[in-house]
Image (cartoon, rainbow, N blue to C red; front, side):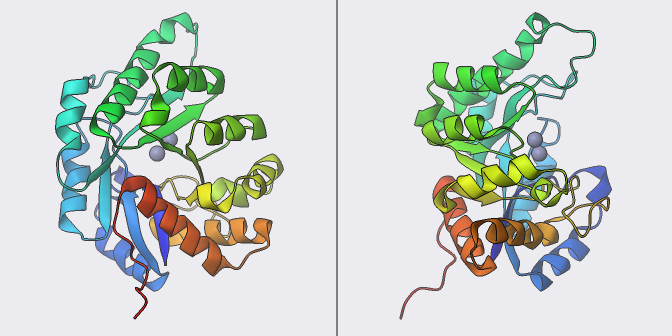
Length: 265
Ligand SMILES: [Zn+2]
Ligand SMILES: [Zn+2]
């Protein structure tokens, strides 16, 4: 019934817990998950999960926060994107939150890496999984400059303003909400979740981080995504089943997956 559109099942916090997580997912009716890649070094582990389990898919990409890792090229990402069960490019984007002593000029490597992902996504016709933090102006400018609307994608773990949400929708992107939407201090984000049309919404956990209320502070996992769906449903005045159905259909449409909905007789 539910899809977790963004989780990191290869991170140390969840390592070795796959069987327990899958049992919890089944109990919570979380049917499917997209396992997100953050370094090329990690890709083979992420991909192995997608190959091993029917209801897992994966992405290929290098997270903007990762330094001192193998730098992706269009050629390398294109080759990975051609492998079975690789359905998206990312996570990629810009993150100026951890600038430290550096200036924005010194972050050119991040912008160049982002452009490489967008060019790949256009070439392989797969959607982008975009991470943006403290960098929305540059993120939107680069997406526009590189013609990212031709690839499409999702702004994952959305924490930006209404204006940024509007700009993302104008580019044809979806907006994905995480457990943050359940946090007490996230009133502005709840307004954004109310605003984004249901047919453009995804839900995610971003496990192992950001566990939704009532699990806040615990290690997150995909079986908690129904709490995100429930929060979005409450904000929109809908039944949780409607949000589950719509976000699952949006996931299928964005990542080009077959429908899991029961077919009419
Ligand atoms: Zn992210
Ligand atoms: Zn992530």
